[in-house]
Amino acid sequence: MGKIRIEKTYNGRSPDDCYNAAPAALEKAGFEIFKKREIAWLVIGHRSDENGQIQASIGARPPAISATATLSVSCDNLESENLQEYADAVMEQFEKELGV
Image (cartoon, rainbow, N blue to C red; front, side, top):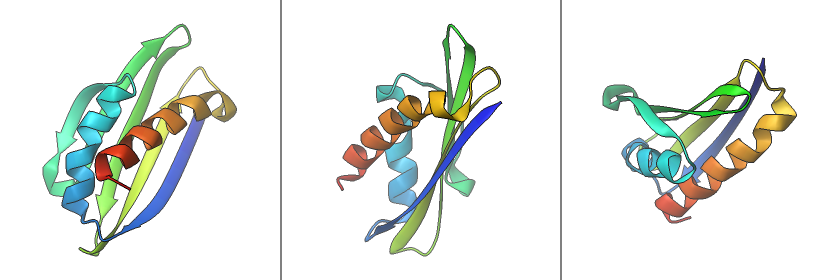
């Protein structure tokens, strides 16, 4: 099972900003939104390819003016290095949505 986890702090962005950017970012990167947890600032998506189902989630946490967002991408049938392209695509869209 492969898994990638990327954690970044976004100065001037709140957890709400990250939560609001996450659904569009995941969808633009080819993921279908599976679950949203507004109270936890968490959005989970998934997509299928020839290797099976790939899951991605974006979660955020305080402080309110420099939120830390965590992107996780995983798949039972792929190694971590094969997941990097999916993580890069989501992160690129996420940062576009945040305007950074």
